[in-house]
Image (cartoon, rainbow, N blue to C red):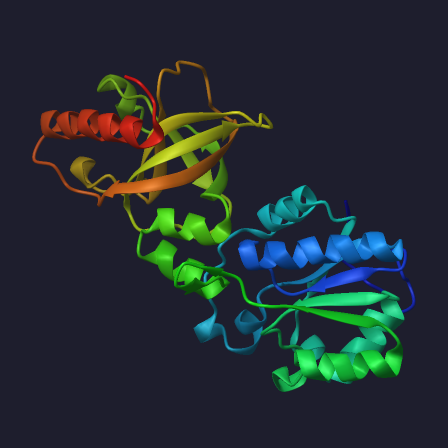
Length: 311
């Protein structure tokens, strides 16, 4: 997948581009529907399926005090788009100057002039251009003027929930990682390197990998049943993780400590993908190390049950 970060006027880096337009934070089921339609149209038109996305989030530039926490890091978003099968991604640096473009200027100068698109696919609630005046209806008008096709994807629902990045953020903020997964179409995953910690886990019989995620929305502090991918391996290992400050030992900086079941390898320096399957409890300060160890044993048993792993 080709990633273009500096789109120049007239550059047209893709062949008859079919463009999925949006921020795509989390690449949830609604976004996946947009990508699926983009791939179908690209095959029909013999062109390249391309996502056009932004960094940072537009609200972080226009109203920083209201900026949402990003569900995934940019690198994770790009990886998800690659897995979706796209030929390319344009990562547009969002600035106040870019935000000042009218909907017509954005379509004329960027989508048509720089990308040379043949079609654009958007969600039903997309907005773009100065003052967010660009809507699917306005896009259809501009498509008639500039000669491209517009495809609007309707909302996707899961049960009573309309799938959206905002809904996923609310669920993750509440610690409901299982419900969030139903909207994401996969478990919420954080990626980071393993660094040397305090080594207390080894001394109490539960060695942990201290993972420092590089971006992505952290759920509330607590204990979680997790599945962990190591390096580039597609396989995952079950485990239990504590996200928090470890108050029993005097409260350290917030960290993600992950214990893999039935594993005794060296993980230092490794890149781990920690997928949150279910929240088991909140973080607690225990009166003694013995009480903590007893609770960890209990947490591990519950996590094994949740993940379907034998003791």
